[in-house]
Amino acid sequence: AQSVTQLGSHVSVSEGALVLLRCNYSSSVPPYLFWYVQYPNQGLQLLLKYTSAATLVKGINGFEAEFKKSETSFHLTKPSAHMSDAAEYFCAVSDNFGNEKLTFGTGTRLTIIP
Amino acid sequence: KAGVTQTPRYLIKTRGQQVTLSCSPISGHRSVSWYQQTPGQGLQFLFEYFSETQRNKGNFPGRFSGRQFSNSRSEMNVSTLELGDSALYLCASSLDGVASANEQFFGPGTRLTVL
Image 1 (cartoon, each protein chain N blue to C red):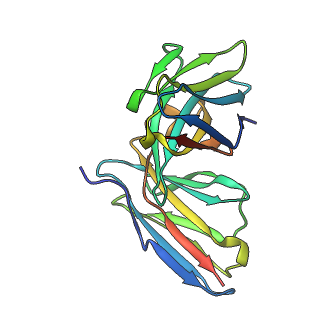
Image 2 (cartoon, chains in turn purple, blue):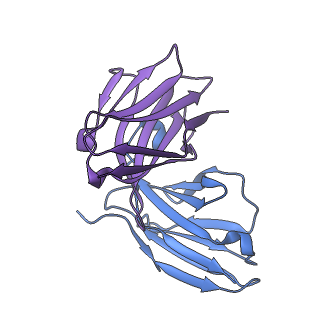
Image 3 (spheres, each protein chain N blue to C red):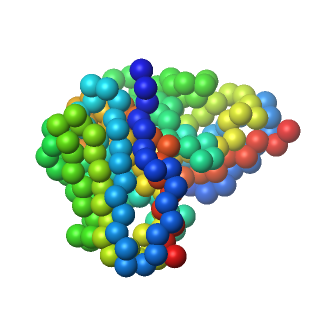
């Protein structure tokens, strides 16, 4: 069974500082990995995805993530935080063998300090 | 192109009632998935429909059911509502489903409150 673990349910960073949100996965097969963002009272929006091509994936809004198989990690980073980045972030995993569901982590709420 | 729409956005029901939620996917998308989001359990997969067939199912009781129509619109039904069914129900559509790594586009959700 696949799973993802997000370390830190709440993360606070100062505006302009580095954002680092952690995600570790567990999968018995090569996974697809995703990061989604959820703003209050809205659905989920895809930030980026890893599908076994380049290990460094660039997404929208300046976010990127690096797939590290040796560490089973897919951490999300952004060099400089903006106030508009305040939201909840979810890491998700799916296998690529016909399993049509996403398994989500528990989410990390990102707060930006002015 | 219009996004995924879900109706209604908010619902209040009482225990024992049943409820039907609707999802209209992005035009051309054939896969529709449903997720339940609660503070305690997080985001959990309910089921996925593709070309009117349930292709995958999560670990929810039989009170949760769904269907998909020929135009790809989908409905989910919850019968005999329980307090624990209070949640945000999210619908997501994609071209062919997650296994092909197609992006899933999420709707804004339906907030169900069971009293």
